Image 1 (cartoon, helix red, strand yellow):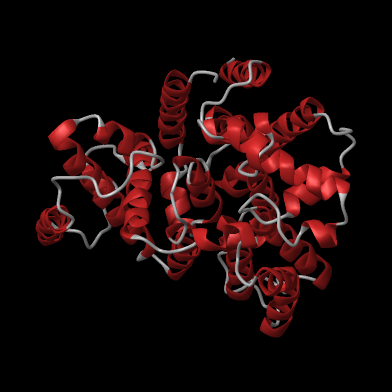
Image 2 (cartoon, rainbow, N blue to C red):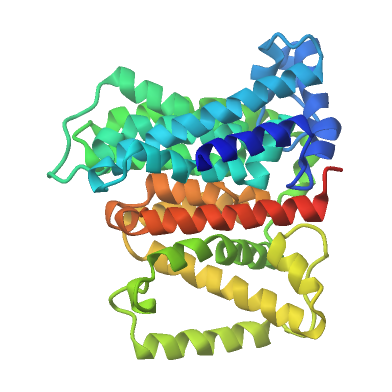
Length: 410
């Protein structure tokens, strides 16, 4: 009944033109639809040189082949359907990875249904922007890796070249839709190298070949973005703070879901009283060093935490910085758990940290999906349980309601 209700809400959101992420509708008409028409009306070799979007061009190439005859409503029906397919594939991917840990297909579908409640995913699928499609490629990559990702013996047998090629292409497709998904081919190659007996040269050669289109794009654009957006790519302290606030917010249901008796259930074994004192001292230094009297960024973007903090007056900036600090510490604690987690966190966050303005929809729901699908086995067993899935579901409902109330259907 709950799953049916989620699907019905997704259906009505699409029919009513829901824009709960706040940016997908205007972005579609200003950037994405113009780029789709450009790829449909001229040769790809011409269109790819410069187009009005900072994303990689795969979505526009695919869209230019679809039979929607220049009608955005037909295109929206196609992307709406693709969103449902992504949920089904993600459900299967969760089940394939966690069936041995007591998660049946119904609970896996329930856990995956959180993406259908995500303002980012819903708005992207409803309006046909880029943020929903890479999650489909994440799910397919996970399905290919599921047989070996949690292999408990020394190493799994070598995988065949056809499977290796398919994996590199699927993982690369996520990156060729959104640059933020560069972590997926990197992580997929890492899993093959560390979990199987596949010759390293074969793995590196195949994945390097899959990345050749990006080399061509970099050569053509003289950078990682189309020329129109060349000046929009640079690191800034504000990005680190906003990434921290989003991690702090989105990791909340995981923390609450893993707590049974006390915080000791979620803290690493090496964490003690000394670590707690150091953490609080670090928080104090973090707030003082960043001048807690005034938030150092504009009111645009950021996400719920930043918007809430800006409305709180004098306490707003300390609140934003405290949540950001918690998120950054959570990311560090996750990263030091294993080399796999460290690679996943660094490859996932690096492209996001050097963007100009970070929005919540860049991390939600991709952060949770990446964690559930690709964290190392001990971490995955801890965070993917029925309590966490329930907390994440309730949390997703609250985020969706907040998005709808804040942005309405405009």
